[in-house]
Image (cartoon, rainbow, N blue to C red):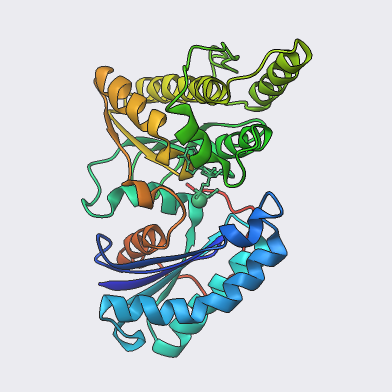
Length: 335
Ligand code: KG4
Ligand code: ZN
């Protein structure tokens, strides 16, 4: 089953062709990072316009690279939400048009489900149940998944998402945009124990997260050191900040899996590209007697292969999305 995936929820225009929900025949991403860099963040209107400009040629290229054609598609999957409404509408409209023109069934995909299903590309899904940690620029969420496509939210951030915290601290350290990869790289040269930042809600008893206290603590530390005339060590600061985030994510993920008696942990979202998070999850979730899966690096951040993968699974269950569906910037994971 050959499915075209389209993802335009934020600042990456992405198109992929995936066979049987596993084999990636093509997976193209046109990044808008250079367009948004001078604004220090993603500008929604600029994002939507850029998607319009590149989406059609990108679809042609993805089909050509896959050795496929519009006529040979067995399904079309596009992200419906959550995300930036104007950006979402561009990909959604293209997906509906492709479906209408070819007769291939259309399926709308939740972006968060896409991040979770990125784990199933290449190897297929292991037996559920799972506990999933989704950490991206917009979300930080622990989810219990008793079976595929059933979701129970166990906890989430009460303020900023983890990726947002990475981006803001990167800005504070003058590392530019996007911040996550820059902090990750700098932190490799730093000492994670140099500054003891707060582990927000680490012992709150629930499975929620909070990032704003940590962000403020980093800011206060920088100002305090400057006021005292001491030079800050950016690498130590990056490593210490990152360690505080990773600490809480690792411990809460293990707690969630134990609470639910679940052995398999799935990680998804852009922040899962973080070197330290991957390293510590592998070691500590493994040491807790659990199995952890995460997508390969390039499948953690936004891509369309994950959308095609989740869409294929739903199409195989006989689901279809009516073509009058609208983009939903606040779409939730439905159980
Ligand atoms: O999933 P994603 O590509 O887009 C959203 O759905 O939001 O995640 C993007 C987020 C950004 O905040 C980016 O800074 C962060 O993921 N990110 C990272 C790393 N790579 C991307 N954060 C920490 N370490 C990384 N290596
Ligand atoms: Zn994402």
